[in-house]
Image (cartoon, rainbow, N blue to C red; front, side, top):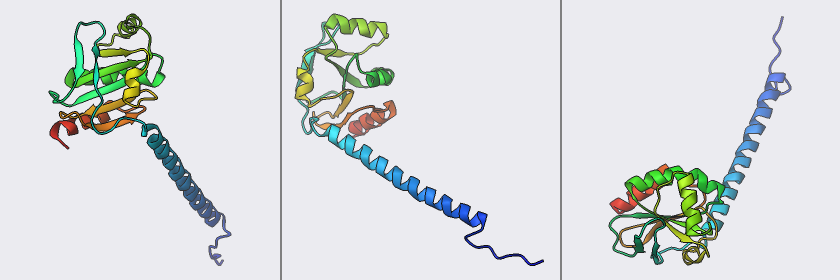
Length: 184
C-alpha cells in the first residue's frame, strides 16, 4: 500500500491551521486588553499631584499627634488615600499596615465619616495605622485624588516619586519605597 501525502485538507493539517488562528486571535485580544488597561491607568492618574508634594497636615485619629508633612523628611513616606466604603481599599489594608511597621506611612481616610466612625472602623478591623480624617475630601482635592485607593511615595526632599490610583501590591509599594530610600 502506498501512503497518501499529507496536505492541508487532512484532519491533522486542518487542526494545526485552526490552532494557529486561535493563537493569533488570542494574542491580538490580549494586546487589546493590555492597551485598554494601560489607557485606563493613564486616564485615572492624570489629575494626581506630581512634582513637589502638597502640604499634608492635621491631627492623627486616636492620638494627640499633630502631623505636618513637610521636607526635609526623615525618610521616604507612603501617603495612602483610602475609604471605609471602598472594597479595593479593604484588600490593601493588610499590606499597608505591614508597610507601616517598617516604613513611614500616613493614611488619609477620604469621605469615611467622622473621626469616631473611622476610629471604630479601624478597631473593628484591628488596624493600627496613622490616619488623618478627610470628611469633606478637601485634602484629597489638594492631592488630585478623585478615586480610592490612591498611593503616593514622597522622597526625603518632598518630591513625589510614585503615584497610583487603584490596587497596588504590598511588594510593589515596598520596592518603590526602597528605591526612593536609595535615591533612584
